[in-house]
Image 1 (cartoon, rainbow over the protein chains, first blue to last red):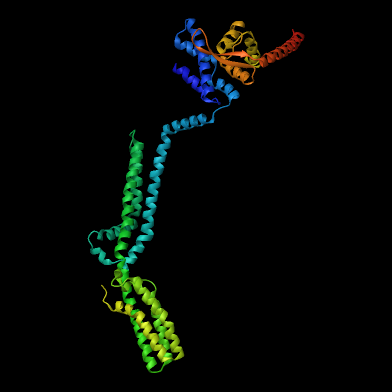
Image 2: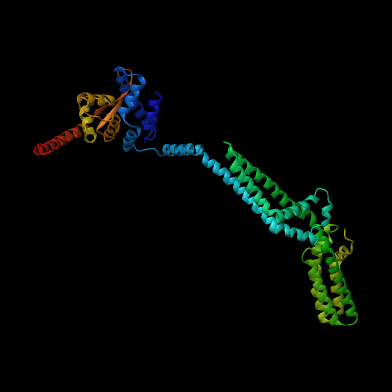
Length: 343
Length: 111
């Protein structure tokens, strides 16, 4: 009877109209086929053969269905679902598709890893070595436990790529050739995939170590750059003090032109101190005064300087004294920080 | 017998059979088989699209009935519109037969 129900499924499932129509149609066709099979059984035919004969007399399911669809229309959804199920069945069985996908994915990972390592070896690691050579990344890190190996690793990677780069291509190529030539196992495709996956994992380790070594070394070694800036910042602070003294002495001599030159020097030194990391280097770790607060003092000093220059141009000693007092008041905290010893 | 010829006359046969009495699908097929001594070698499944088309056109009407065997069957009967259509089709069939026979008679012995 499964054969009968399957046949009725094929005929009725796609016929359009309400569900009750399909149910009645199914019942009607089932009755006809059971009557026809009963007639053959009555003539002495075995049950299964009688049903086969009745189905054959009735005609192919597509033929009957298309005739019924011409009257009642057809249902789109079951057609779409059946097509999707057929596609799924074909796809799930398509071993070549999944194997190709796996090879493609592993191959892509390998290519990206090799490109990343090449980019590092050719471009980034030399720049990193230059920064170390210039002392911008603290050389003292070579002595730090747990970090020293990173510099050695990058140095080793550079050396391997420089001197053994050809071998890094030849050895895997020969190994692969030998594998394809000698290995005859029925699991060969799986072994190949496993080998490629292992290579991808190994290269991933190299990628992580390469990137990690550079990032960690840079973060830990970068404060050395700040220490190199501090002397420059202290020098600029000293230049500002010298310029202010120069203005006071020039005014005492009534040499307004010299006072103007010193005011220009003070302005230039203020600009140098306020740009880049110079000001921040005076307060490493934002202590004892936060960098933002230092910067606002420096800005107030810069704002006071035009009044100093105007008083010099006007040759107004009283006004100049008041302007210099205002400037010194704003600049004082910066001067104090610059005079403290570096930590 | 050529099934292509049968296709064009199936609705006429159905209407004609139903003019005798109400019948269900298998009964129509069995009657055609019996009355023609099995001359029509057709697929019985093709009967149902024709029945449903005739019903959709209002020429016949189908009703579920349960008779002595205990099995429910869909019996079809002719409507008034179907009876008029049958008369028209019978007349057309007669004219067609006469015309075709006339050609065949005049061509007799020349094949």
